[in-house]
Length: 333
Image 1 (cartoon, rainbow, N blue to C red):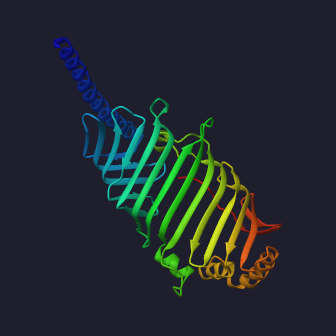
Image 2 (image 1 turned 45 degrees about the vertical axis):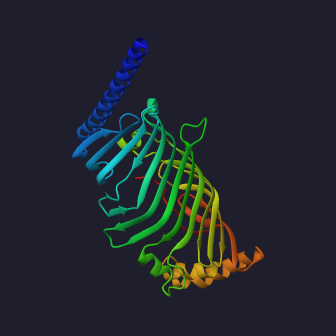
Image 3 (image 1 turned 120 degrees about the horizontal axis):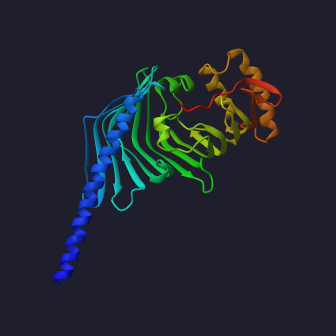
């Protein structure tokens, strides 16, 4: 019995020492990371770094946090930020954002408030914290801009899963319920106020290739840039309006996409009117667009439904052989 007690005491002592040793190492690692960013010209501040949760959890809490990257002009400030992981599994991290924090750029400042905003991350510590999977959940989220607009959603979720055998290919899924667009956007699109205030459903599913894996370097250096997007479906429903998109795009180093996007729109004449009210479609062009799209809709069997395929090439968007505008640039800042 004495031997058993001695063995248990030794094991317990070693476990306690291991927990406190790793806690000290975790805190020192964060302090060293901050020091490295300062050496690179970042602005870095944290009032306090604490590690708690003995014995089953490591919970690292940072208060008075501020990070600013001079290369991108992006800055993030938060009154607190928490990283939590089980003491027996260092590869599964839960990140918890505070009720309110701020992201700023040279052009705009965004205040993000939420009843709940957290991410669960599966990472590989031996590969610079390379991301294998993540799930971010949002509830009661509100974004307020210094430019005067505000947007909200009741709840949303973003999932990201690295594909086996591919270093930088991820299955990405997004869903949001009761999305309230910025007031200025809503008034432009729906000045009569006939549509519901909130968009009940917005969702997207895509397989995305990046030029490098998502790891700690995405914060330290540059964000991974998409090189291919295989969009299974993007969908939005707002009142009587419904829009679906699918297709595949290859993206060059300048962010210019090449490929095709299939669009299915229900009640498209009202969408065309909304685009005109928002200034996205010149008033003089609407009759021509309405006539051409009406012809295409008629070919699909229902004049209220539109099925078209847009081709993106060399920075422009084409409907058949006709250019209809400049294409988007897809770059992560």
